[in-house]
Image 1 (tube, helix red, strand yellow):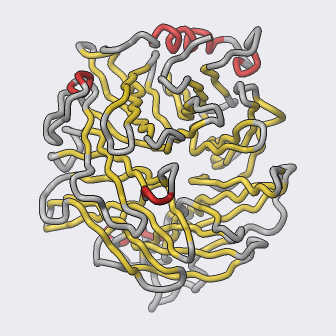
Image 2 (tube, rainbow, N blue to C red):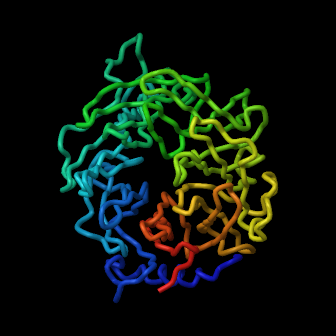
Image 3 (cartoon, one colour):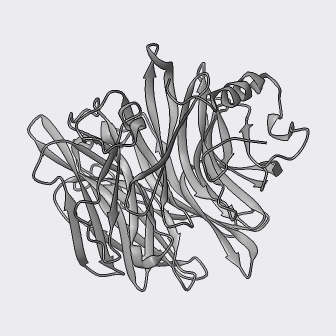
Length: 448
């Protein structure tokens, strides 16, 4: 593997995973760190957020019960150096997708968590009703307790000859508005007998300042299936996100990128697109605002000229504050070819790469985090982290690849107050998954 100057630190940490409570095992504080957080069963990272005094991590775990399994969401806090504070807080019957801390006057007042609640009934008449998904919203106080009954977007209509299949609703990203209201982006599948072929359509769910249900609106912008990125943003009554639009022609499917930009509770006012006239995989994973609002947003994801993603590169592009994709802003990164820092042709892929998360940096640039799937000839044969710092226009500042034994999959990235880079994700080794939290300096280095 190329550029593995930090690999030894990463691999050494993995060798220490036989030591329980590794997250509390540091003999002394460090400026940077790599820590692991383990549960009794496999635990996968879903998201990370900054909170006063440290970070909050959202994860998921499947726990066995007497007769079945229980999906659990896990929420926990760490301090600035990654030491876990308090317990793992567990919530049954939900698979979390996103969350936001509720902060007022510099004090943490709680969290809002969004995910899926799935009911499985193998004895129903219609196969499409075996698994029914509802979008679930949890509102927690500062002590991690649920403050009310969970809010659900679900199909409440009874099954009948006229309604033989339930609609499915899926949770997605959540964010807060300037006045403390909440916006949730999700998707839904209409109930038809051949449910697996129903397209996923988009929906927005609004909550009041007290996090009560306020409004609900669907956006069937095109008769296609949508795959939304992990973030949604609201500003001055407008809502923006990134999505992949699947174009199905017979047995062939390709996807292109779209940026829906809508007025709250109203119609789209912009729907900028990229790749809509060509055939490829164009899959956005995350969209985040630049450090200065005037510079709009950065988007990261995966591009492949082959629709199965086998020629995947990480892409980055910029979006203006009005939701328009900025022409010529797209950049492409390959885990091998990009190390010479020259522009990469989007269709040149020496190794499979996927873009997963992005954060703006205080110097006006962005940090992109993804994976590279290595081989025994190139790397260690698993998924390694691929981390790229770009300036405001997408030119490479530095690139790092880091990996240990097993597969490493990032869930989120953010910038600390001093400019350090925080990456959260999942390491999977021999079928067992644990959450990792890594703090690098602003140059992407792990140092004491």
